[in-house]
Image 1 (tube, each protein chain N blue to C red):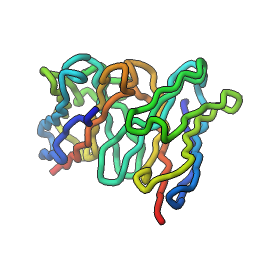
Image 2: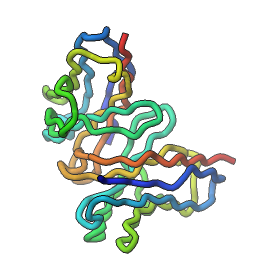
Image 3: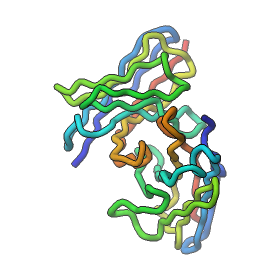
Length: 120
Length: 111
C-alpha cells in the first residue's frame, strides 16, 4: 500500500524560510514522478512542481519558478518543498502527490496535506 | 496558463444524474486526451476518479463517467448517492511548458 506521510502544519512570518516534507513508502521511490499540488483558501488546486527522484529531473509551474525548490532524498524516500523567503501568498494547503503517468494527469496517491500559514 | 473553468456548484436529487463541466482551451483539453477528475471530501485528500478522459481506476463505481467535446470535458454521475456529496476537480495536460492545469472545483450537493 502506497503511503505519503506529510509534515505538520506550519506558521511563519513573511520573509522567513521553510521546508516541508513528505515521506513515501509502499513503492519504489525512484521509479515514479512525485510532486506538490497546493490549494489556496477559496481557490482551486494548482501544481507547484514535480520531480523524478531516479533521474533528478524537476519541473516547476511558471507561477512558482524561482521562488520554491523541490528536492528528493532517495536514501530516506523523502520529498521536500522549501522556500528561502515566504510570502503571504504562499498560504495554502500543500499536498504531496505521486503521479503514475499520462503526463501528470494520472495522480493516484495523495498525502493528507500540510497547511502553511504565512502571516505577520 | 489559466486554470480550467468549472461551475462552483452543482446539485441533483438522490438517484438523478448530474453532469459537471470543465472548460479549457485548444492548448489543453482541446489538444490532448489527458484529462482526469478527482473527488475530495471535506478534510480528506483528493481521490482519482477518472483519467484519460473516461477511464476509471479499479474500485471507482461505474456510475462515474467522463467525456470530452472540443475544449470542454464533462464528469457525469449517474444516480447520485449521498456519499457523492463532495468537491470535484478536473485536471488536464497543457503542454511541455506546464506540469498541468486544474479546475477551480465544483461542490456537488445531493438533495
